Length: 128
Image (cartoon, rainbow, N blue to C red; front, side):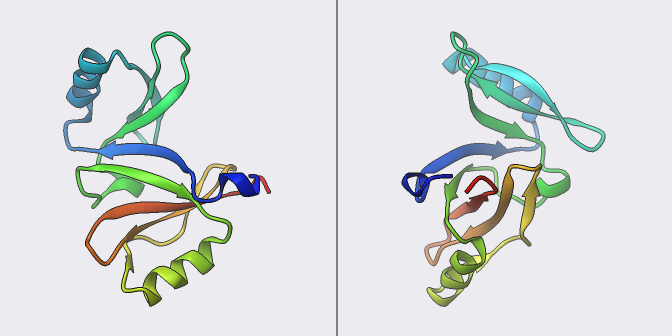
């Protein structure tokens, strides 16, 4: 990750009980194509641009690492130092909603809630 990526929204996903139906909804409304993404015994979805196949979003079941997440679009914001950003979040009146989680070999993230109650995720890439 380069310095220019700090603060950038790197991903969005939606966690809902009826993920299978909702992925079909977004396919019909936006044209996004769904590709299955294997999880522990079930499948979430990576939504891709129809012309290019570029991944643009995730639609997930509220299971495993996504259990307990609110049914809203969650943005993942690139940060330089995840632990420092979490500490600052807490100092500024926010809260963490999860432990730090791994995203494969790509990086780590943590769900947070800001003082207004908005949920997002902080993400630190392993590519420095």
